[in-house]
Length: 447
Image (cartoon, rainbow, N blue to C red; front, top):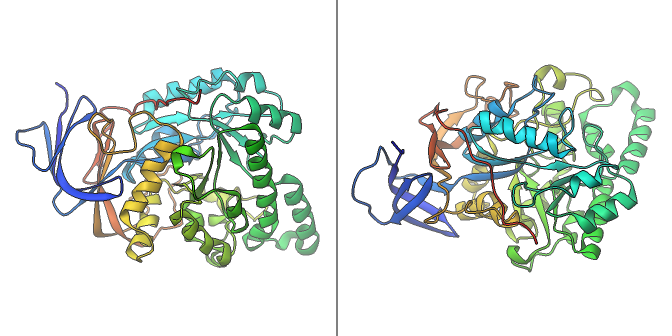
């Protein structure tokens, strides 16, 4: 029998408004939204006093499969995502082997179909010599093409100018870029190595992977996109200097160049390295407070369009190595909403704007089909949130395979009670329901 779900008395947050009502779900979709719905369903949830938001769409995660599964898997991290209210993710190609052929890309989709509790899509990866493979990417079934314009991890740096020109000119879908200038980073690293030797620490990270490195690379990407008409999405903006590259006046639907900020860059600044060290070492680096404090206003004025996590887990043992050996990245997908709710409770952002930037905007920016909004006929991707419930992050409730979080021991205000993925009750009252896996995301395409 088809599972039906009736959610009653929810504060429904959608398209900048909050209204109380009921939602009836059948065949995976929202069939009806009304102030009061009579009748019964196989699952009924009384949401009185709680807030129902569209499921979060995280457009940047690293789930480490294949090849790096000692850190994470699609199965483990998708479950952590669902526990955090994330119903859909877009995952990166820097795995082993890198996702740089259509066959390797499709293999990841097959793995996700078997094991992902959340809805899924995967980026096609680029190198200096796989252009023909990249141009075969299906814009209606793949979220985008990822270009590392600075070698963050793996061997996927694209630094050949002719290759970049052709990618930006001929890409059949959205291009997402990691922007850091490799020449600048290498020169900075050599200078700091000569000065500090083995005494380098994470406190130097933001000066090695510097503001200049970000600005040079982002400027190149934006210049190419403007000249060649590319649909460009610049990932994880970290500096005040880069903000002038982006247009805050156009509606999102009209933008050809968009920008993303990640929750850890809104939360941390370089003064926090003293406490967290390598645990918050990431690329691009967390910068100083001046840059951190410029990001939220840019988000609120629509210079920055999307909030994501760049969830990038490593083992505790890997992170406890000396600075130069410790890998970059931190696990965040289960706690991204909580970081944003901290800002909400501090009066710095409204709940409607959080929904806009974490749910609506990714759907619009990537032209997702029938997701990202609470609308009749749309897929039922939903998260029910108790905004007031206090809870503490402990090793026992962390679902990442790596088992740690920079927020371990922290008490958050706001808790995800229920997550519905494509009409399936995937997370409810602290328990996962693995009876149905997520769906492959589909897109409207760009041509």
